[in-house]
Length: 282
Ligand code: HH2
Image 1: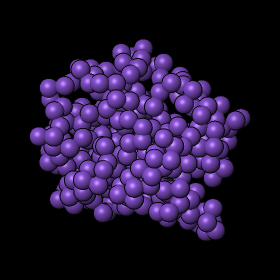
Image 2 (image 1 turned 90 degrees about the horizontal axis):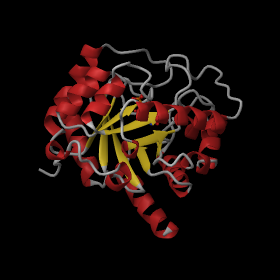
Image 3 (image 1 turned 90 degrees about the vertical axis):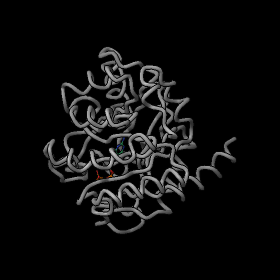
Image 4 (image 1 turned 60 degrees about the vertical axis):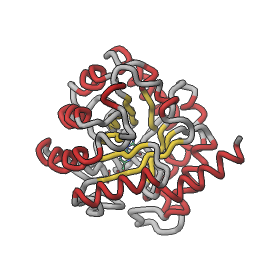
């Protein structure tokens, strides 16, 4: 067993020791409708095989999710979300390093019981009043992400006074909330939430000024992989996704500006690019 989670709960190292900069988080969406890979991993055996391949290709962790949060999507029932992710976690939870991408405390609790070591909550503990307690009680890692509004409407004319200042203030407040709820600060990472209630310019400005978010003192996760802003700047105003070379460029730029964890769909290519970028950055 590569993954000794059962004996390490409560004594996990700080997240920056467990996931040093740069680390790749491979995306395994067990959904029919994710914006770029909907349906690819809907069968358990496909999700398991892809998760194993991502770890073999150099991902430090795989992020398993059952609910799409693409623009325009609506919520999913707990039963449906559990039915998608639990069979996958039963197969890989003790074998591979796994993160659970959910905003539901019950899904997180069941995933943790099967071996998940990180809860990736796109609502930053706002979606379910029991989530903070579940994460704190398990002593695991958590990612707190910024989102303006809800997936169904978040891309309808998002506005900020200053996107970086606003996202920073939000993440600072959620970090304080999490620590007050009993989650050790050294287990927490933060994410500006690329594409979650943001225009193209907002997304790129957040990366351009990422140093202002690293000033919060916590490792940053960035998920620009395949997002539509990348397709749009390449000339297709109706793009729903962005291509791989543009995804890699955004990931490398984010890494160079201080990102620690890059959340990506194409693991091998990002690992190769980030290995080269790291050799340059030193
Ligand atoms: N992006 C997506 C989902 N979860 N979590 C974090 N921390 N950061 C992100 O940028 C992020 C995320 C959306 O991408 P994907 O999972 O591929 O799509 P969908 O929500 O349609 O399943």
